[in-house]
Length: 192
Image (cartoon, rainbow, N blue to C red; front, top):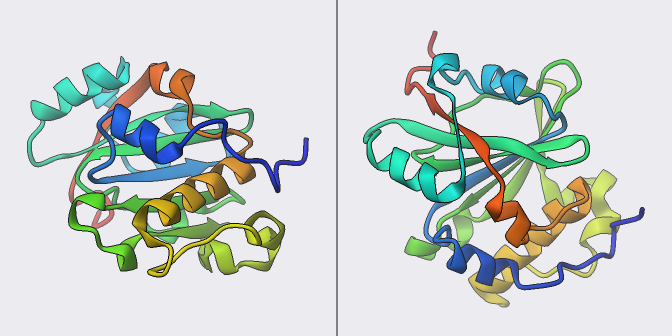
């Protein structure tokens, strides 16, 4: 199915608000459904994994002050997503080694820093660049608007629409209802 012009059934922004994720989070999509592989690529503590829904993940994060906590699960056929519930997901381009594709989005509505909103694309161990500017994805972006002139809400909607078009799934209530595995990622994960 060609998703290059698809749009979500509902507002992605409103879903973030409804599920208490519209303040600050990192979302990272990776082209595999192997959750343990993803945890390993992001250097999460493998013994820290706890299967839980979003509500429970918020509760568990409150008990892990000072740690980066990321909630990882299947997103769509061939893709998974890691939502960083606290901290910033530390990783380097080499997390995409071996032909993996990784798309990242940092969302910081609580400080309204539009300049910090964006999506990066990593492939095969390298940072390729800003997702919207990459020729491979031009068909997915031509009708999307981002920037100061359209504002934060429209920009975030556009980024999440772009991620949905590429991965084959937009955010919806079923997505938020799914259980995923919450992992702890050590601060020094990439200094070892």
